[in-house]
Length: 338
Image (cartoon, rainbow, N blue to C red; front, side):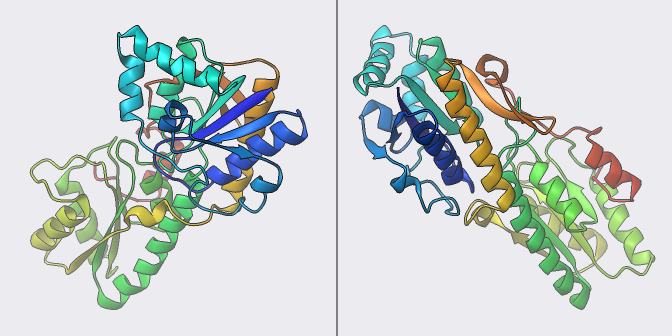
């Protein structure tokens, strides 16, 4: 058999570990030929590929980014959603001209939806979920999340010393457009006093009440962790800038903001993400060997398994008010701004 591997969407720690997990399993255990498709789905259209061998997959386990390159698949998605059968035929021809028996697509929500559409065209595809946001539906966790949380937690840890020394409120903005998993986990792990998430919204009165109460108790500083995707009601400012300004205006306490940004997506993956990517990649190769296509590999209840792409396409895994970590935070007196 001959299989292809591509990566699509944003970069993320653990992609190379996953490529390695797929490739080395396919080559060494199942005797498959493996090619890497460069720059996402566009590489499939242009047949821009490289051969992946056991030696070429060595030394990449700890590398950040992706050796295959990545891209957003807007043009490709337009083709696949087009009613023009010529577009669909072009995609299928490119796949068959490469001599593929299976295609592994590593990416987030958009990639999994596109992979499902390829499955509907009759192509043999397997999805591997990847995102630091941890919002892919159908799996309990995605690789990249643990690395991002570790980086964000370290940043919050470092803010504590500055905040306490200067008796300030520190607002740190973390990644997460629709889902607040990074802010929730890093906020809890880093000892944030207020955690603001897109899913839960906020009331400014609740935020001010929490900060004032801490000051009344003799706690001279506060840490606010906010997800970038939270909807601001009356401003176009970045969340960190907005909340820092409002807190200083309404409480009089000196407040500073930090936007951690893309540093959360870069660098080497944690040991957990390396292992998770390796296991998910190995399971993807196994599914191809068994001829089980149209599936997305997943980790559910601490087991590596797989789910139907149709069941996960277009859905998001979001934080809710009854998420166990939210409930525990509330029991400890952490404010979620509501």
